[in-house]
Image (tube, rainbow, N blue to C red; front, side, top):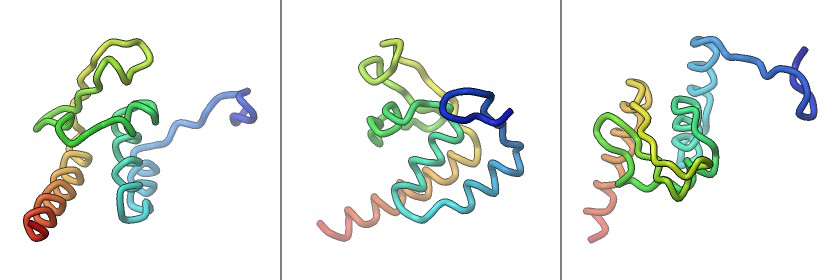
Length: 100
């Protein structure tokens, strides 16, 4: 039974469905928010509280003040997410250096 008004079981996406969904995200910050949500399993509030300094080379640090359990945790970066975040961070750094 599909999930309806908090009842039932949520659908689980296959790898192909998840990839198709990620490819359909609009360009911009919403795309990266959606990608982190899809590949980390984090809550929306946790992802929205992230800062670039929380995204390390191989993991994302979710700080205790932003988590439901009030305990910090590290999520290993999925290769696809890592590729997208590196590309976006590079674009941001280039745009900052141009405006200075």
